[in-house]
Length: 267
Ligand SMILES: NC(=O)c1ccc[n+]([C@@H]2O[C@H](COP(=O)([O-])OP(=O)(O)OC[C@H]3O[C@@H](n4cnc5c(N)ncnc54)[C@H](OP(=O)(O)O)[C@@H]3O)[C@@H](O)[C@H]2O)c1
Image (tube, rainbow, N blue to C red; front, side, top):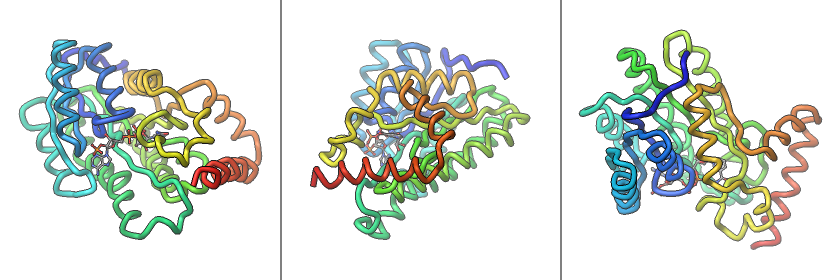
């Protein structure tokens, strides 16, 4: 399959009110001239971004406020972005985490995390993939997972498990959909400097965080070139290779010790 060309095409970006999603939307408009549908819960922020991108880069940016923890809002978003346009691609980026001991997270909060990180993604992918295939738009889908889905991260245990689900989902769909003309890419960043990592608990892990701008550019390029899976940043690429060479339990126990230290020294 040829690389994608985003110029004048419509792309959905979820979780675009802050962090990686906001930077991905900016990169798509600024560097590729893409038209966008942006989604998240905080409508005021989305509208501000839409106005800015439309004015600066002469693209169309439409806002669909949605709580992706609610299945009705997921349906609403699919209808919105496929109604008055032909959608070319989608980057499913919205996500939430919990950094702390596993038993600090109550079951309801876990269900919410799973609804946003997994159920919404499965529901949107199940609607978008046949849509892309039937229309033969030549575009694709990208999931934003995490290195925490490749290597288990204790003290982000439930989050890590939801991201492992996405890694497997993306890998399977990549091979099922490639012969059907739709690319599926899984983006697996390590730590990024965003709202998600703002809390004091992350203080001792800050030196591992990647700036969000370069991370977003790598995400867009991985999507455009239809990569199977992509990890941004040299540090995480080297770490990824090393972690494959070392015994798995040694890698996880090292990660556990770093996260525990950061958690305990920043209560
Ligand atoms: N930061 C990291 O270290 C890191 C590392 C690896 C992977 N990631 C992944 O990267 C993605 C983006 O995270 P980020 O770092 O950019 O964090 P962020 O700044 O907190 O952004 C998260 C985005 O998800 C949206 N979101 C959260 N709950 C939602 C809900 N119920 N319905 C709809 N949208 C919702 C938020 O918008 P609203 O609050 O306005 O709804 C926001 O736009 C996530 O999938 C995350 O797991 C992050």
